[in-house]
Amino acid sequence: MEKITLKPSEDNSGERIDKFISDCSDISRSYAAKLCDMGLVTRGGKSVSKSFRVDGSEEIEIELPEEKELSAKPEDIPLDVVYEDGDVIVVNKPQGMCVHPAPGNESGTLVNALMHRCKGGLSAINGVVRPGIVHRIDKDTSGLIVAAKNDKAHLALSAQLKERKAMRKYVALVNGNIKEDEGTVNKPIARCPSDRKKMAIVQGGREAVTHFKVLKRYDGYTLVECALETGRTHQIRVHMASMGHSIVGDTVYGVKKEKFNLNGQLLHAKTIGFIHPTTGKLMEFTSEIPEYFADVLKKLKEK
Image 1 (cartoon, one colour):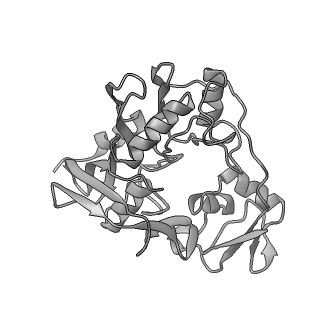
Image 2: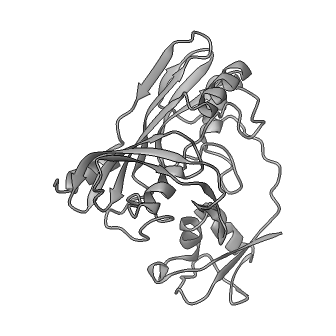
């Protein structure tokens, strides 16, 4: 049984334990509550209930049961489909939806919805848990994602990502004012040595390159476009935080408490482009930022 340790800070003081675990790890809040009910969450060697509130004085230890073999099942979940043909499907994923099943999030994912819509017609390269999934975006990141309906399309799209021929542009609102109009962050990313649930800038990690361009400046905030050259886990979130400009709403790499009452980071996968695996035609799709993102921008004062 795997064990992880989380250390609350003063910013977490007063938070329910299940929320704290969810905010500081990849464990969902519902699964964190279940672990509490199973007596697998302890403080000072004693089990705590899911309603326990952390105070920042002691480490929280969590025992994770051995992962069981997962397989996705079709679920009738509405999807915002931007484009679809016999090879690919492009979906505008909402914030809060996981891309594929994982312990604690075994249903309600994009994969479950795609399996229902595509009637099993998805690529099999990534197995029974992630059929059709060529690339991922975080649960609390909204926006465009492309999935493959067959293995030929999957291999072609994967090759484009590997060879950096596919285009992925995001829009993010970050804390603070970025002075440069544009720039590039080229810093290697790997698992954080002190917290395996997080990624970090690590010497010797995998190459990670993000190009950014300022779209608009506000009083205390900057709206930026981030273009991915590589696609590491949490890449934009880690790179922006490494510049001292964490993404608004990102409680893992940024400010634990912010004033907008958000359910996740203000990061939206706005544009995706790729060469169609069958026709060879260049395809490009865009989506507007979600309403909750736009509402925050309306509250800000432009510089």
